[in-house]
Image 1 (cartoon, one colour):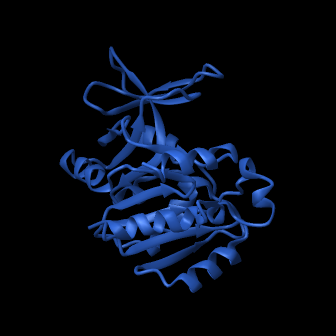
Image 2: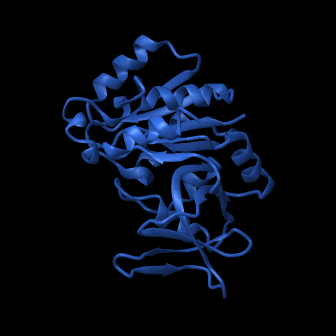
Image 3: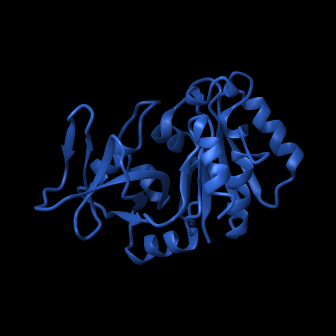
Length: 241
């Protein structure tokens, strides 16, 4: 099947004051932490190899995992010295992954009803190096795809910045959902040698030579629980569905 990487190292500044005393991964929705929601969902899809990166209040996450005894193998990627961003985090965790299985990368503060099997099937059928879950929604930053669902660019509508790596007559903007599948080989194709870097610019560079595709899930329930006001929304939309 597949393995997973839950991005749990962020500071959770938008969730203050809750994250003044705990990591955002342990912020609760309906009395269950974001981390537990996501681990349980992965287990329900028979994912038994999960890597979690830690930084902010890392000892609390380690304590949580030791007490829960999840029905899967959990590996910790330690970022306590330095928060690495998604690209850096992926390279830092390289040796914790099984090189024979594709990796589902998932932000810990995302809760959704996205069907991981459907996402994985799309990823495999298109022979994608990476498949990015996206939806039609209003946001400030968009990924741009052509009619063949291939990544062609990125834009920030607040600043006017636009990066086009594959020219096409018609590009469709989608909001990135913080969930993606990658082939393990992608990690070694990243040329950025910095310790800290974002993954999106790397996807844009790689899309010039490799298939980076979209998975459009606009009809699925999806909540970014990155702000306090979204916790109640998640409880209503996510748990009562």
